[in-house]
Length: 142
Ligand SMILES: [Zn+2]
Ligand SMILES: [Zn+2]
Figure 1 (cartoon, rainbow, N blue to C red):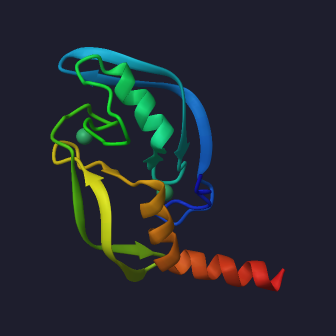
Figure 2 (cartoon, helix red, strand yellow):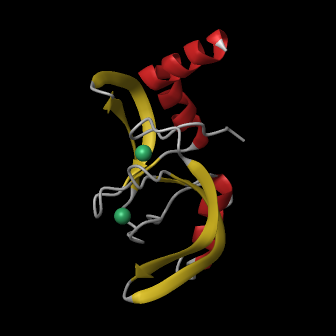
């Protein structure tokens, strides 16, 4: 599994793996996925779900058939089934530095604006982020 060392949204290295219940309202019904493990950024509130977490969320949604392989059909934040896979250049900002991650594939929810990144997408973001370069430099110096 890809190690997530910093938040792809704000570049914070405070992002950490948490394990807790995640509640969502789907079609007026509350669904709770208990003891879900995911990464959460305390600085911007970004949540990152890995393949296992998404599978757990989806298997909890009785209205959806269990996918054979990882395929995101419901938004982990609002439960909307309008979420879809998009592929585009994504411009992000880190400490005032704008950078572009070309041809990034991720799931975008038109309902709540949630962006869900696969571990592959996260490593692609990390590879392009100035935060990563900074961190790599720091590691070398240490
Ligand atoms: Zn963040
Ligand atoms: Zn959503």
